[in-house]
Image (tube, rainbow, N blue to C red):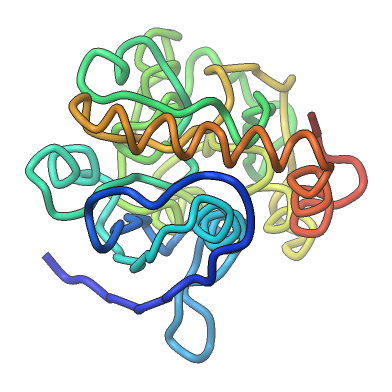
Length: 240
């Protein structure tokens, strides 16, 4: 597994006591802007980096950031390679059977289709989606032909090179791409999936889950979470 570890010792700021463990390892993908990505300095960046650092500060946690490929991100959490998943992961009943989630730090948002032909029949074509996502599960049950890829960039490339007729993903990921490429467009209607995005944790880490829940709620209560959502996703983004 290729990993990038960035130490981020966080100063104590507000309520919540430190846990018994010395370091909380925050696992993310680093390939799904604006949620998470690797910046020009080779560091983990994005909305979730900003949220995660603030949560660690409020909870008085010392945190390290670790990257992991999406298709093995849950198995490597449960095997102990890191302590949280903060990677644009929607809360679903299926995932909740394997891991636990905090309350959501991002509200339920629209998934969108993007392609090169606005008249394409989305129920009978080839649709690309990232493997092990709620979007891939939706397409698998829709009647369309699902073409899965390991990374989000590969799903977009599949449309550009003609392998797929459309890509189905979070609207916040696709909208900036469509805005910058005249050949690509949003097609069809938005689809609401999942219960928002939360941090994933091992089912045994109940103390850490509750500590992070308190920190998330404090960010909701003082408006700082909404401010970060607007900063990274724009004024039209869904907020709490």
